[in-house]
Image (cartoon, rainbow, N blue to C red):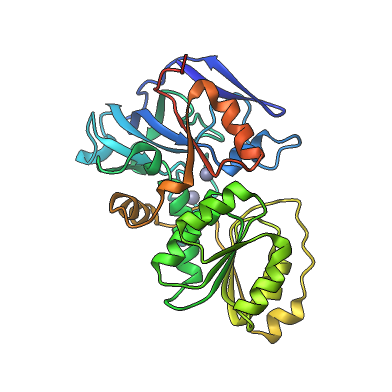
Length: 342
Ligand SMILES: [Zn+2]
Ligand SMILES: [Zn+2]
């Protein structure tokens, strides 16, 4: 089968590789319907890389598909051949200290699919049954591929706890920023100011429900006129905006940190955190939030359609990466089973 393989040093190559087969009792083979390209995939492909990955793996971890084969014990009756499914690509061991303390995101033995094991930028993928969830036929495949990033966002939103009538600022209107925006509006928060320099992404944020979208240069004036006392909740979906977030937070405000940038060293005025009684909340991947994210997508609760700006066959994955790097795409979704356009 054709697959997008990480070759190391910033190279993603389309290659013919063997199809996965059931080896272990809990293996599930899934025909991939749709697989989103994530910001972390771009980080893996940066030189030097901003995110680790094993050369030789097939990338792609935000995917849904259909079961084509099952190991003897896989699914315990909940999964069957033909079943539509979504997979948590970060299998936890259940045995390490953090797992046993109820902090699965900190599991010491995660070998993420699409990072350290083969991912879903291919027509078929092998996944562990324990982390494979049934999915209804209702949502369109490209929209349903947002379940994995949404499950991560739900984890952070649960901590930030936006409430009806609370004001918010979201830094970054990539797919993650837009998922936060959709969740905040669903929670009744407002006004929500989105900060985004790229015009195409700003337009998507408006479609998803942003009350106002500003460039970083416009933020100061907009925030002072709209929210003179600061924002109740601030989200950094960029990974470097903590210093700015502190400047714009209201008394008692919460700052949710989501974007990840290993090299960022923002200047922070610690005094303001103390004096304004701010809470700074980090979250990483998911924490039992797949069922919620699946329900949100199956129920059509959130305006997700504008977020998927491009759906491309596997042969055009390189073009998808370029669209994301330039900021002209919000979410690029690959359909590995589709024939390349002639
Ligand atoms: Zn992702
Ligand atoms: Zn563990």
